[in-house]
Length: 126
Image (cartoon, rainbow, N blue to C red; front, side):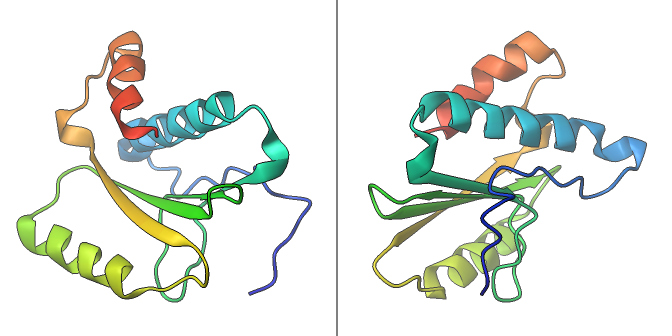
């Protein structure tokens, strides 16, 4: 894997379809919350739509200081089988010297009001 050090905080739009608007807003808000929480940006890397050995998490967040990686998957609605499959995929993936956490975000349970949505997303940021 070759890291492009010039594009550490680049946000990629996954789909420009109107049905994905809430998905993209949630993704942007989560990235903004991560960047606001970690003021020293030299210790973190945040990617969206990052290719990770056959998987593409919506948000890939790497904290070099704590040696942890958090992968966020944003889905409109997901089943127990999808959640089990994704959890198993991320549990089997190993990053040397780093811990990996998988956080699914279900759009169906989030508010459409931007102020309320912003408050709800606080529970997904560590």
